[in-house]
Structures are given as C-alpha cells and as structure tokens.
Length: 223
Image (cartoon, rainbow, N blue to C red):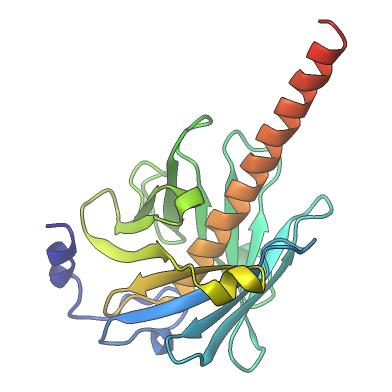
C-alpha cells in the first residue's frame, strides 16, 4: 500500500524550513479557519491537545497576494507570495518575512492550466530539473479536504488531509480539517503547502463564480 512506502524515507529528517519542525513520530494537527470572514488565508494550527503550533496571516485583497506563517511565539517563519501574470497558478515561498531571491525556498504550481481535481507540483530551491521532476506532488479533492502530499511523482505519502466536522465547529462557523504528517517530514513546510493549496483554490473558485455571473448576465441580457 502507498502508506508503507513511506518507511524508505523515514530514517532521517526531511527539513525544508528547519530540522526543529521534524519529529521521529507521526503527528496529527488541526487546522481551523473562520468561515464567515473577509480575510482569506487566516488559519490557526494546533496539535490534538489544542496546543498552538502555527498561525497564518494573509489577505487576498490587492495586487500582491501574500501569506505569512508564524510560529507559536509569533515569529515569522515563511512568507508565501503569489506570482502574478504567469500561465499557471504559482506561489513562491521565502524565509522569514523576505521576498528576496536569495531567501527563496520553493515554488508550487498547477501542472496544467485547466484541471477538475487538485494537482499541484512542488519544486524546492535546489531542484535543477527545470521543473521537469517535482520534489512533491499534491493530489486530491480540496473541496472535500481529502488531499494527499506525495514525495515526488511516487506513491510515497508524506502527509494527508482529513475533513474534521464537529457540532461545535458548525455552531461557531469554523472550517476545521486534520492533517496527518508522517515521521521526519518538516511540519512547517507541510503547513505552508496547505496554505498555498487553499490560496490557489480560492482564486480558482473566484474565477468560476465570476465566469458564472458573467454568463448569467449575458443570458439575462438576451445574448
């Protein structure tokens, strides 16, 4: 099975943001976001005991869309920035609050312009394949929060999402889901991929809604 293939990678830490975010055991986290908010991309990441791990601040307003991931002490770890005017949806990640090329960590993009299911390729800064061979691949269904993160284009799973619905979450209007991270994978890195995944899908959803509205207006006008 796909899960068992992870054992070949689990003997050493796979650090992208920092080795301090790699643990030798499997970790489950809960990612929460208020549904009724004008600010997209704002999450809180906690462990299963409710202990705060990461916080994400961001906005989709303005020309430059950006997210910043903070640690438990509110220190900025990663800045995620949308790359504008590209053929594919693309986000770049940088160290701390920087957006300088010297602090570039990785990029994530859609392999194709049009796609019905989620599929995103991740390329680390040291990838020399000219984006022919990805370092990580994300597949699944974002609307169901059932995406899986693979090591390269393989069956080796490094993390996967699960929808978490409780009576309390529905009552207080929160979008909750769980992410299982397998041993020795960089947890801050996985969180950043989830944030980028959310951002890309938010843009795609807005485009679909806009196209539908335009079609409805055209039909109403008799075209």
